[in-house]
Length: 79
Image 1 (cartoon, rainbow, N blue to C red):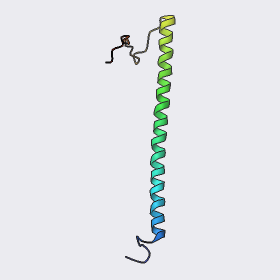
Image 2 (cartoon, one colour):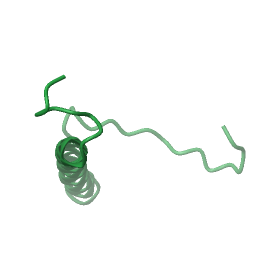
Image 3 (tube, rainbow, N blue to C red):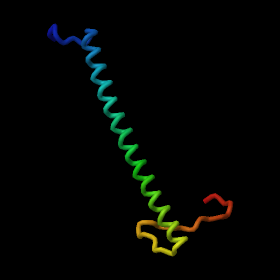
Image 4 (cartoon, rainbow, N blue to C red):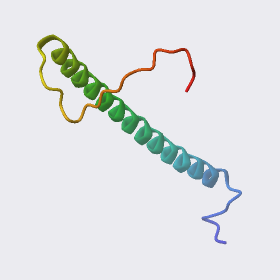
């Protein structure tokens, strides 16, 4: 190997650790942002479903086709 690139060199190790830290930071940020976007989409859909169900109960409006309503089992049995 040349004198410019040695694995035992502290400078080379610092560069490698800095690059790995940068990569981990970008990857973590990507996961965080995509999770945040998925959560916001879920909350938005839940809000619209709640409004649709409220309007159905109060005004007898038709519920959107996207919303599926199932009856909740009131018994104490675990399914």
